[in-house]
Image 1 (spheres, rainbow, N blue to C red):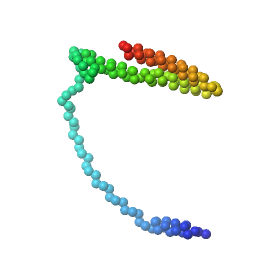
Image 2: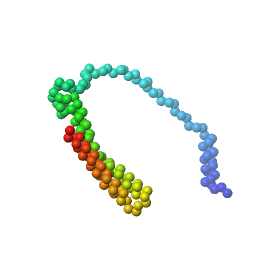
Image 3: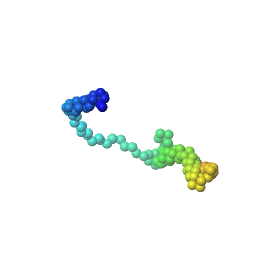
Image 4: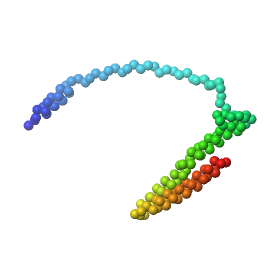
Length: 135
C-alpha cells in the first residue's frame, strides 16, 4: 500500500516533467580585444662596468666586472651551509633505517650509525664550503 508521501512525490515529479524548461538568457556582448602597439626599446642601456672603471656600484667594487658576481656566489655558498650539514645526516639516517627494516633489527642502530656518518660527511662538506669562501 502506498503512503501519502509517495503519492505526493509522484505528483511533484509528474508536474515538474510537464513544465517547459526555463529560458536561457542571451549571451553577453563582449568588447573587442584591443590591439597592442609594439613597445620601443629604451634609450638607455645597462652595461657592465669596464675593466678601466673604478669606484663602487651598489656597495660592490667595480674594479673588476666580476666582483659583484663573485660576492653574490659567496653569499649563495654561505646560505647552503645548513643544508650541507643536515642533508647527509638525513640521507644516511634514512638508509640506515631502511637497512634496519630489511635486516629485521629490533633496535634501529644502523639508523643511528647512519646519522653519525652523515654528520661527519656534512662536516666535511661544510669545511669545504668554508675553505672556498676564504678564497
